[in-house]
Image: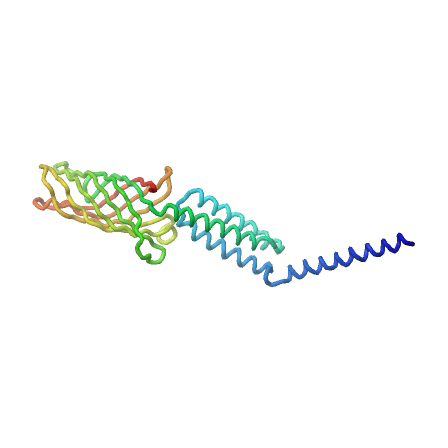
Length: 257
């Protein structure tokens, strides 16, 4: 008899606990704060935000981490859309991981604010055969939408198509960078500047000329490959000016100090 009383008491205790747990789960599922529809909306928004931000990340390891997180969100989103099963941990996971990655990227970028790039290119410059090399410095000027600016200093060698005159020009250019997705699927830039012929055939200094250009940049060889199309003018001040199309292909790489 005593055993039956104890058994009834135990069953009543677990039955009440089970009912309470069931009610809590039901409340959680039906709670609009963690509803399936809301989780789907939030995941879509976060995927879209990360896909836009990843275009501006130049650190390869961070870009890989962000892509992995996007893949994780897409998997959870597909589960929610196909099975309509609330993933109760998704919101917390998304928030924590997003904050960690954002904080990590910001810390590394702030630790490496003093960045510049070395660059070299060859091809046709202002209607001559030539090559040049130099340094690109990012600028902290007010941004226009998603763009960023840079200042480029290049020096090189150019020879007229007929070979009758050679130039050693120095370029000073201003550049406006556009992230991938705004003009093409890759990073793009436009720019303009002045050049000065330091010396020309006959060991004589020249004078000022100028150039305008448009370029496309893509990752490659642990740096960036770029192609540039433009128009330029080289001047000596005592002979007819050299002018024509510029078509250059080059390589640039990030350096920090």
